[in-house]
Length: 250
Image (cartoon, rainbow, N blue to C red; front, side, top):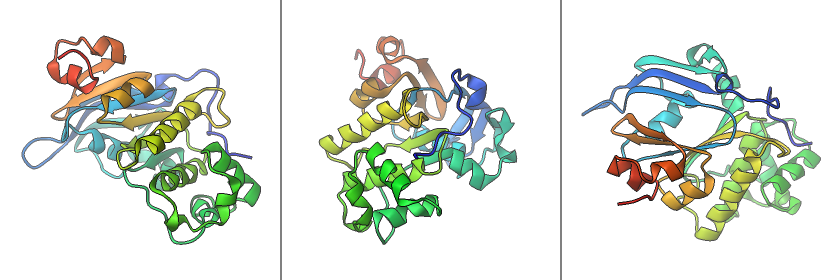
C-alpha cells in the first residue's frame, strides 16, 4: 500500500500547516527575507512567485530546515519549527529540487533510500502513483530521462508519507511534455480523494504554470510579501511586479 499522509483529516486549517511571523533572514547587500508574515495551509497548492532573488528558494529552505531564521518564528502544525526533530520533520515535509538527482542503483534501491523496509509491491504502487510502470523498479535510475528521474525523486519523497511537499521549480530543467506530467501529478496528489493527499508549496517563475496549478498565490519581492491571493485577482493588482509574476496586465 502507498503510505498515507500522517495526521491528515477531512478538515484542514492553517494551524495544520506553516505559520511564519516576522521572519527575517540576513543577506549580504540586503535581507534575503525581511519581516515575512505568512500562513501556508496543508490543503491544495500554494505557488510562490516573484523575480529572481526575491527570496523564494530561501523560504523553502527555511520550511525544510535547511536554513534558519535570524529573527521571527515559524511553526509547523502548531509546534515551533526549531523544536521539531529535523529528520522526522523532513519525512513530514518532503522536498523536490530543480534538478532531479538519482543515486547509483535501481529505482527500487533509490526508493528504499527513503523507506528502507519498502517492499516491492508498495514500491510498484509508488511507481504507478507517479505514472511509471512497475517495470521501472529494476532499471538503473541514473540512466533515466530527466522527466523519469524527477518522477522517481517525487516517488522517493512520497515514500515517507509526507503531509506536505516543497517543490523548488521542479520542472524548470524538463521538456514541456515531462513538465506537464509532473504538473498533472501534483494536481492529482493535491486532491483530497488522492490515495495520498498532500499539500504543496511550489516555487515557479512561469506564469502559465502558476495559473494551471495554484489554489493560492504568494508573490515575493526583495524578501517581502508583495501580495497573496488567487491568480485571477492578482492579475489586475496595483503593483506591476505582482501582475508580471502572475502573467496579468502589463
